[in-house]
Length: 240
Ligand SMILES: *Cc1c(COP(=O)(O)O)cnc(C)c1O
Image (cartoon, rainbow, N blue to C red; front, side, top):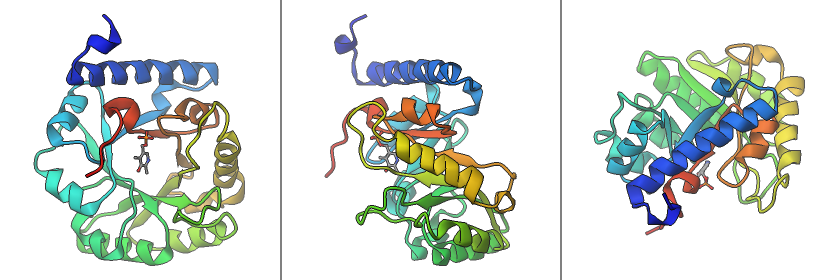
């Protein structure tokens, strides 16, 4: 079947299948177990009917960017088929709204935010799994811990009662050609495994969330555990 003749839903199904194949092959090429690499569908601006269709066709994790958008969609998302992660900028005063709705927060960018997550998790009588976001390319437009401070901040945050640090997340600059972000992926790997004390991780292992539509194959080769794909699955986003 010609790719261009597929309708919107068929196209999404095709994209998921193709990406899963690509993940499998990239893992094998790197001597990794394909099952260790998780595909997260980044679903900002994607409506619940489409999210649920993706979940029926192999997507087991979705990632939302905004508390408000997550709340609006939450009841319509079929939670029996997929778990929800939070991947966007999180304001301290929104933590309360999402604490019981997500299983992993990728985007913890300050000790203050971590404190609030721990506080709200305690109220909700749960442990919240988080990743610490590192501003790996030192971009002014991006949040995240600096490479210089992450070691100390990770240790500080790991002492909070109701938080489990599962690993690190990075968002490097948009990549336009193969290998462009490898230096950042390698740096993140090094930070995660050589620089940060293993004790700060809940599982004494580190989960690395890195790689998007344009560079996920490179990210896998560099050690990514969760890749986050938006337009590669759903097509280009239209922002209103
Ligand atoms: C949108 C988004 C992605 C996916 O980006 P694509 O280029 O559409 O694959 C991944 N991570 C975060 C944090 C995002 O906001």
